[in-house]
Amino acid sequence: MTDDMQLLIDLHQPNDRQGPGSDAATEMAVKLAGVQADPGLKVADIGCGTGAATFCLARHLGASVTAVDFLPEFLAKLNRRAQDLGLAAQVQTLEASMEELPFDDASLDVIWSEGAIYNIGFENGLLAWRRFLKPGGVLAVSELTWLTDQRPEPLTRHWDAAYPEVATAGQKIRQIETAGYEPVGYFPLGTDCWMENYYLPLQRSFPAFLDRHGHSEQAKAIVDAEQAEITLYETYSDFVSYGFYVARRLPD
Ligand code: SAM
Image 1: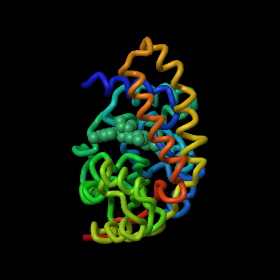
Image 2: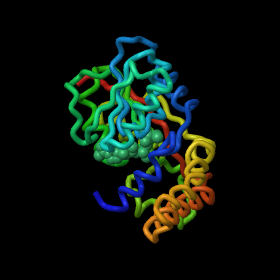
Image 3: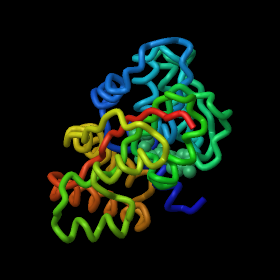
Image 4: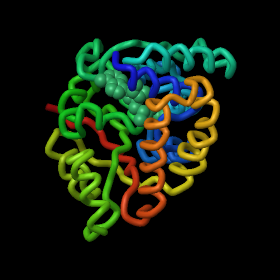
């Protein structure tokens, strides 16, 4: 693992979220999906980080949730939080790559993934994960989405280079249909999901992070890059957000 990767893990691991989101948004997606609470449900949270969505799902579905991430540091924090929240009996962690998930075909009722499917690409993830869902099973993912058809040029240039799959909700929903799912609903995340729940706690953790790393040039560069992303979001929040997409697997 590179030094930068270790630093990024150290920066993000103390926080409750590693990406934009909120309990209210997770709950809204659960409602849209129409999933009834049932202890027998098989649920996986892919790219779970330190467990923001995992705990919300465990509470609202009353089910056991398999929390999957490839970073053991995040899973260790998630396990500590599960103990503290009294949810340890409902949460299992699984250290695995989202590219090689070890689930049986048609074994899951729900696949959840907030701010993480981009790591294998939206279309690729839709296609790769479909087989793990039972027919009629729910896929709920949040994904970077253009809110408007026309946008300021610097914003389009930045994200087209950083994540070329960024697209409008209409385009994303078409991809969901093509991959063999019935779209059930979509909504964009509000600015609170980005600022209050993700960027502001991250900013508050910058000083302690820099202290832990002796204000090294490498640590300062990581903070500068995070701050640049925050400024970009604050400048252009009318044009870009995460979209929450809920869909059901169609039969073959
Ligand atoms: N879902 C969490 C949340 O909303 O707070 C975390 C979102 S964070 C932006 C993306 C997560 O995906 C990180 O926890 C990261 O470790 C995980 N991840 C990235 N690539 C992965 C891969 N190939 N396999 C499994 N997890 C991966």
